[in-house]
Length: 491
RNA sequence: CGGGGUGUAGCGCAGCCCGGUUAGCGCACCUGCUUUGGGAGCAGGGGGUCGUGAGUUCGAAUCUCACCACCCCGACCA
Image (cartoon, rainbow, N blue to C red; front, side, top):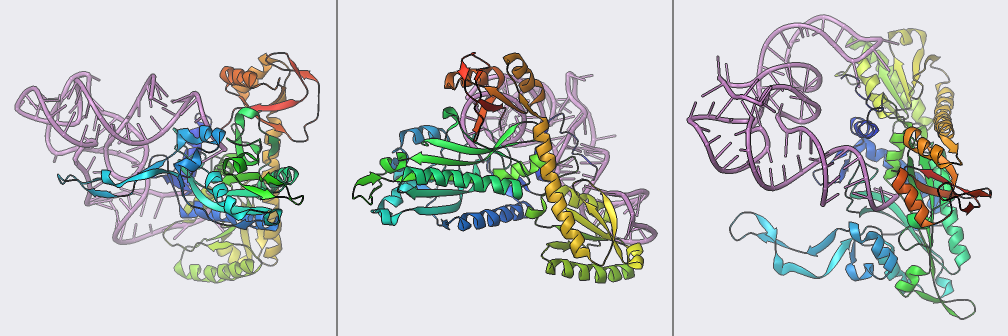
């Protein structure tokens, strides 16, 4: 197989797609806009899930499951919500098929039309809040801190593997609170969980911020997000946390009696991250040789490749390799020994690089003789020869180093491509020619935001939290502004 | 839904303009031998309703029409 992933400069989208497909993560399915997540890709997702799940549980949440189908009437209770999602819903209208009378095949049985259509959930606020109504009467029933792992469907016009598929996997948290402050606190706490996960596990530096009104979740009072920069300078919204106020409680009539004996509507939050994080992983860290998986999320952290000429040698090497594998597994690493006789070492090297396995150990006749292994790290491709003794310590420190290095690299890239700009000409030049994040003043109106979007394709990604106040003039209209916001072209 | 493009073996493509043996190439696949410390070499082999349907013609991958699918760019979006 020849090296082919060299298209990135010419067509980043194609480079990304190739990488996802060739690294064995996913492929397009027979269903338009939907993807097949392959075993290797899914195992990375499982690692993400497991870690996020731990973090949610550590912050007091529990998992539950709500229906895939949402009656159409539920969906229209919250005006802004329905407006935001109506254009991309899959709708179930019938419940039965039949053979066509002329024998030409299976057709929908028109006699089996549903009285009320069912929407395949694009998000579950409505079905969940309809359920919460029955669960909540008193402040003693609050808070409810529930998360759900599920698939959802949004009938997007244009799709891209992991980043925007018609069906995707995610987790959605839906919490109910007695007070506004508590709900806001929850929203921000989850944002912190997302940021910590992105930075410590995905090795992806993110900016926490607040969305502008036009980018806000349909039905939310406030939307917080984490924003990351991909290697083409575009922004990827990698997770969102919404303060929903009492909007859904009002829409679904979810009231409770507070400690003072007064009846009030319940305060809500919702938050989610999706398989889009897989896309972030690919785009933030990948290179022309393939993926680079952060060690803390790698399904295989260490791969051992034998190098031999005769079958007898293979047996000797296998003895050594198996012993090493056992030792490393005992130390808590996930290790694969690839003793396939059907592929040559060079092929395997390239294959595991494509898959982004952080560390490769090669063991050959020389190593048998010297009691060594050759260790190669995926991120920098550096190799060194190690004695077999004390391998655990070296692996541990190497994996930690890789985790940190790829984070540092991504952070350095983001900083290098972040600008502070005060005039529109420079702004346009950077957005059009360089890409990246631009901190600029904005007058705070949706009109100006829309104008800038039309003129440059850039949008306000977020208003960073803890943003320093600074007097300035909107770069488009010259009207006064009190802080800079982040503009970028987004995925 | 607007603009552009592509459908030929599992993947990537040539052939089409100018119709004419048995439709070809690279990778992959299978067999054998030699190889194995960075995607092996040689020899042999298998695999095709040329997207679908109609039309023109003695003859269509090639020309005409319709349809379908997919990709890219836009609008929308996690």
